[in-house]
Image 1: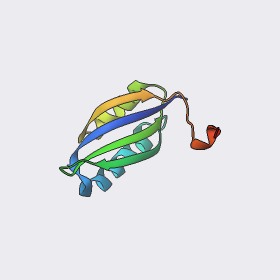
Image 2: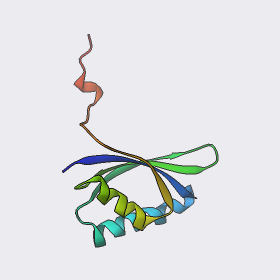
Image 3: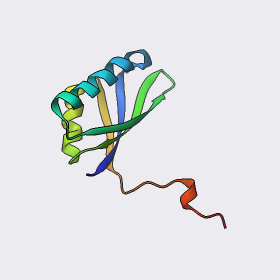
Image 4: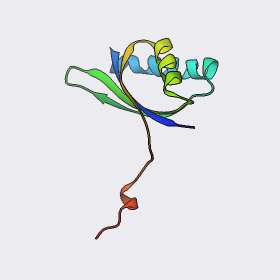
Length: 94
């Protein structure tokens, strides 16, 4: 199944993110079992706004966007299908 990275800008501050995370998970469990949420990196901007970079497996980008609409409280900045993963160990020192 394809993997996606989703960049989001949230309407809530850092303190509100636990509720958003719980809601996101509940939507996946109850309504979208075809989506797997792998992890999210959370970043704060200078004003305390929250951005996340989330990794999902989903049948297609549309499934990601439907989940996002149901979640609310944010805007999707970008969605990209991942072509693969690498680590520093994948590159020999020369």
